[in-house]
Image (tube, rainbow, N blue to C red; front, top):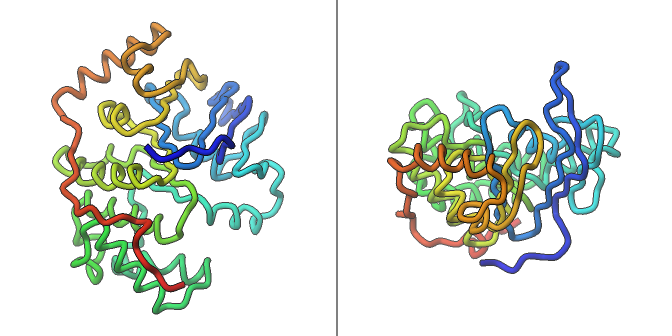
Length: 275
């Protein structure tokens, strides 16, 4: 496992958030350290995805503090300040959110050119390297509608990586995929984790979460019921609610073995880019 820094890269402290009269988050405490893979698990509607949106500033809690590398996100007043912070965080959603009228390559180079100010040639070289990285090198000129769901999600991951984020958030990225496509996406995430990318995953893929996570948070009804190492949460949970959830979830997951990587062992941190 990669070495984990002692200081948290992302941190939530006593975070409360109400949406439409619904108290979605109720005092969330959560830490993500550099080089760490953290999985957030729990029933649907428990506030898991809301936590990710708080980390990026897409949602502003009414109480508590959310910090990224020591910066209090709640203290950022302008959209320009938030945009600067979001450059550091990649977000891969359940829906791929690719631009359908742009080619795969154009989807990858748009943000690095417009937001980071990279020149077109360098952005293109980096994008092509990333497409090779996720085994889609032959799809640069294809359009999203010509790709399978699993391929589109891999493009979305490559697009997030093109911004060279310090932290990448995965929000139920396999839930919209057919079962046979899930493994190809999980294989990419697995390799990123092995290479030391700091990741937070909201997922219902319990066996995958057990395999790749340094720490796991079990969330229910907007609260952290318990958290700890993957080994402890999955095999020695303290809470009866955690035990009941995992029993149900793992029984449902039994028909889907954790995907093994069929991807070439190209390391993201070994790709050479000219910026």
